[in-house]
Structures are given as structure tokens and as C-alpha cells.
Image (cartoon, rainbow, N blue to C red; front, side, top):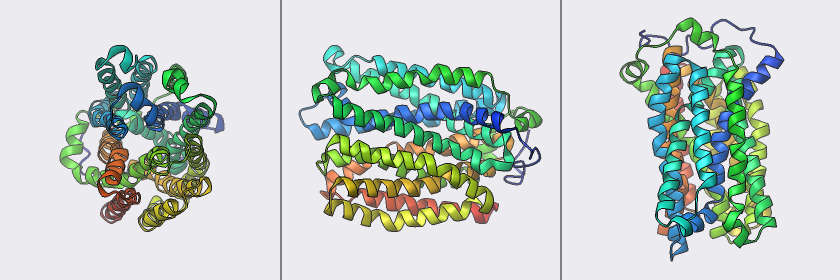
Length: 433
């Protein structure tokens, strides 16, 4: 099946405008969002509890080195995501969105279970951090096709309201972040540092383990998308993508950059507030929790707006505001390091991220035809996340350590925002999305 000459987005939104009823629509959103929520929840728990995990699995004489190694192990899992994207993306285009979704959530549950039960460094020595990295790689591989399969699943069931339905990708991430940060506030305010390090950090991982079986059951009982059934299985989606649609792939990677860099900078902020600003852990997690709640509420409305005016104006506006406000936001926080300012700063970043990311999935779905949609979404999203998102905390902390400036993380945010701005404009001009 050749799609290299297809008009970008031509199949997107074609026909089937009536869509399912409200009850069925809710089932679709839940089925697609549960795995995405589990993926993001597990990532956030690891990132938010990095200070504790550093002591449990990566102890070192220098605390800064221990934390940096932990952040690096956080980023290493993202290296497996493009590999997972290759296999699971092609699997989703050949076997169907439903098959890819059930496989990815099964693998994700295995990775989360490994982290929940992992013995500490004191128990296994060097084998313990090695197993942590292995568990992170399994998790990274499994989520390689999650975003793409669930996005395609949603927009192909409801092409008439693709912006709204696809926006639940990030709304579910906001809900996951709200739960993860809620655990952070609860555990850091009720447990001692020794209790948190001994066993408390395992509680949020154990909670995440409960989501997997529920998600698998729901997904196993959903119908395949009408668009995939009409188009039929693709024979060589990766070949079509890399040979005939490489320009779409490259520009879509660029569009992902601002979304992923901002998200993982928000993940980095509790650790930044604790280490660099010397704020309490409970205060830091509360600020992140407020941003997560904001994202969960705002993103669906952004999706509705995107259905009315298009994705491009919303994303351009958010990218510009990222570029011009990141530095002043860090200046303000550095000058007035307090709970209210931290909340305001993190919520501002979360609001901009909500606007940009809320419109992003449906834009990405427009770029790729049905036959290569999951492969295109998988590779573009996971390459962007692996390069610019997963190592964002490491890059931010390294910038602080090298420059000695607490403002230096803003440079990364500005650079990634400008890169995505250029990519979004190029996508609009080249493909008229």
C-alpha cells in the first residue's frame, strides 16, 4: 500500500462525522487514556522522587553526583522509546490500533511491577541500579507505541472532534501528575526521611501497578477504529514513512520539542526547588500538584478550541510565550524563592504547556495518512521525547552546575520553544495542516 503521494491529512476527518454517543465516547477516552496515564504516572513518580531514589539505588559520597546519576537513569529509559516506536508503531499499522494498545499496557505493567519490588543498593549492591536501569528500559520500550496508538485510536473513532478527543492524551497526563504529586505531598509531609527512603517511595509505584490490569481489560473489549478497518493493514509502513514522508517526520519531531521539554522541566522543578532554592519537599510537590490540576482541567478546553480555530494559532502563541517568559520566570523565582512564587511560576509553565500540548496530538494526526499514522506518530513523538525531554532534568541540572547560575535552565526552555516555533510554522506552510 503506497501512501507517499497522499495529501497530508486527506484521510483525517473524512466521513463518519456522527461518531458514537456520549457513553461510547467516554469509553473510548477511558480506554485510550488509561495506558497513557499509567505511562506518565510512572515516569513522574520516578522523576518527582529522584532525590529519594538517588539514595536508595545510586548512593555516592557526593550528593550532587548521586542525583545527577539518578536523573541520567531517568533519561536512559527514553533511549528505548524510539526502539519501541519502531516495533510497536509498525505493529499498530499492520495489526491495528487495538492490538498495539493492549500489548503496550501489558509491557508497561511489567516495568512498573519491577520498580515496585526492586531491592535497594544495600541489599543487592551494584546489581540493584543495573536492574533499575533494565526496568526503565522495559518501560521505555513499552511506551514507544502508546502515545501514537492511543492518539490514532481516538482521532480515527471521532475525526469530527479530533482536537477534543486527542487532547485527553495530555489531560490524562495531568490527572496522572495530580495523583503522583499528591503522593509526593502526602508522603513527604507524613513520613520521616528515613521512612520515605526505607519503604515510603514504593507506595506510589505500587498504586500505579493497579492501573495496568484495569487498562488491559478495558482495551481488550474495545472495537478497532473504522478508519483502520477501511484502509486495511499497511504492508511496509516504516519504509513508506522513512522514504516518502521523511520531511513530515522531521518537522513533526520539531513540533514535539517544546511540549516535551516543558513537561520534563516541570518534572524537574520539585528537585530544583529542594536543591537550589532550599524549599521544603512538601511545598515543592504542592506547586507541581497545582500545575498538574491546571493541565488536567484546561487541556480539554484547548482541544475544543482547536476544533474551532485550528491547532496552528494556539501552538504558535504558546511557543512565543514560552520563549519570552522563561527567563523572567526564573529571575522572579530566584529573587523571591517562596511558596506563592513557586506555585505561580510552575502554574504559568503548566498553562503554556497545556495550550501547546492540547493542540499537538490532533495536529500530528493530520500530518500522517492512515496507513503510516501510528508509525509516524510513534517515531516523531518518541524521538522528540528521547532527545529533548527525557534528558531535560539532566541538562537543566548540568547547566546549573557548570554555569553556577540558577537561571540557566531557562536557556534550555527558550531554545526548545524557538525550535518548535520554527517547526510548526514550517508544517503549516508545507502541508497546510
